[in-house]
View (cartoon, rainbow, N blue to C red):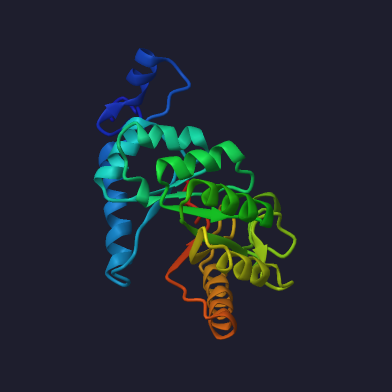
Length: 247
C-alpha cells in the first residue's frame, strides 16, 4: 500500500501484527476459494469423475475445513486429531482419505467407527491389522494401496517418497506391491478399490508424475490380467513446488 506495507486480503499485515502479535499466520479466504475452484475446473473438464483432495498436514482448523467442505474438496487426513477437526464441522467423511505409514491400532479403530471413506494402506502390518479390525466390527472397509513406483522426482532426498529405497508404500519392482494386492483381494473385510502413489514434495517438473502414472497403470493392467483386479480409483500424489519470483 502507500505505506509500503504488505496487504493480504485487503488487510494491512503491519496492523495485523500490531493487533495479534507475531508469529501470525494469515490466510486470504478469496484466494483459497479461487484456487479450489481452479483445481476443480482444470481437472474436471479433462476427467469429469475427479475429486481434488486437500492434504490437512499443510494446515487445518475448523474454519479452513468448513471452507474446503463448501468448495467440494476431499481431505487427506493422517491422524485421529485431524479426523476430529474435520468431524467437528460435519465434513462428509466418505470424502476423507486416511493416509500415513504409522497408523496406530486405536486410530484405525476410530477410522472404522467414524466411517472414513478410504484408508490408504502403507505396509503389510497395517493391511493385516486393518483386515482383522474390520472383521471384528463386521465391516467391509474400502482401501487403496500406496505403491512406490521407483521414480526419482528430482527433489531433495529427505522429501522424496516414491523411489526404490523409500520406506513408504509397497515397491512394485520387488514384487511387494503384487503381494499386498493379492492379500488385500483375499481379505473379505477389505475392499480394494484403487492404487495410490506419492512422489515427494517441492517437485518442479511434470515429467516424474507422468512417468510414475505410467508405471502404476502398467502395474494395474498386469494385475487385471493375473488377478482380475479392477482399478476403480487412481490417486497420484506429490507436492508440486511453488515458483517464487524475486525482484
